[in-house]
Amino acid sequence: MSAGTLYLIPVPLGAGSAPETVLPSPVLERIRPLSHFVVENAKSARAFLKAVGTAQPLQELQLAELNEHTPPDALERLLQPLRAGQDMGLVSEAGCPAVADPGADLVALAQREGIRVVPLVGPSSLLLSLMASGLNGQRFAFHGYLPAKEPERQKALRDLEAESRKRRQTQIFIETPYRNRQMLESLLQACQPSTRITIATDLTLPREMVLTRSVGQWKKQTPPDIERRPTVFLLLA
Image 1 (tube, one colour):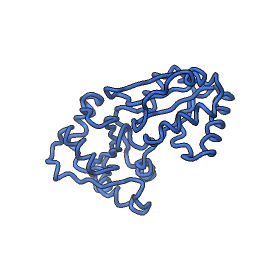
Image 2 (cartoon, one colour):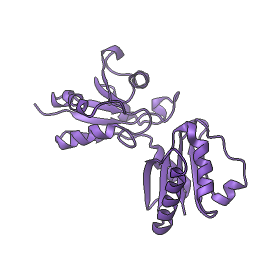
Image 3 (spheres, one colour):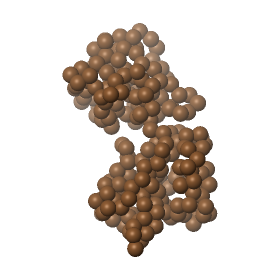
Image 4 (cartoon, helix red, strand yellow):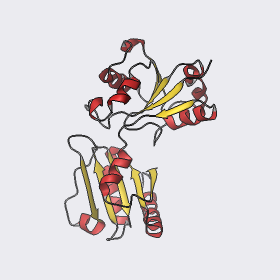
């Protein structure tokens, strides 16, 4: 029996967004027949699948969780439906799975076993923020989460700024939403006045905001309200 296909399923970037506003019709049609899913959070995944409208009743779908609490030895059993010839979907909490997401480990294992992996089209906060930033889209790097505490965070920012200046490379990173304000403060303290900083908040949502200013300009204006709002930070020295 040939193995099934692992579909990487993007989801909206925030609560309350209808899937059809950010996912093309062919993607929705690909999702609906699936009955096996690996998800980061079962509750939010069920809400997403209910909104999509699956072919099978919601209670009959097989959902297995994969998140930061999943032990590494559990990955093997998560692939069992694929080995048995069943197609399966991988669903993250927001945006595209396997990017800054524990689903990357499952994709790596599927690739090692020769299982077909198909990424589906949907919103990526990282690419959307880069597109709207006006920073260098030819050369960029994503760094995930930076250190949460000072002085490690400011050192990391100075290092990224130096690398950006050397390579003319846009640096992209994220932060836990409740620490957004502290991250912005650290950026303005650590970076040179001419360095450009982009704040991309609530992408694809009604309160979406993407602003690019130099550090000097940011210091002269009231900081935007980004507390507890999903935000991507970008800098270019």
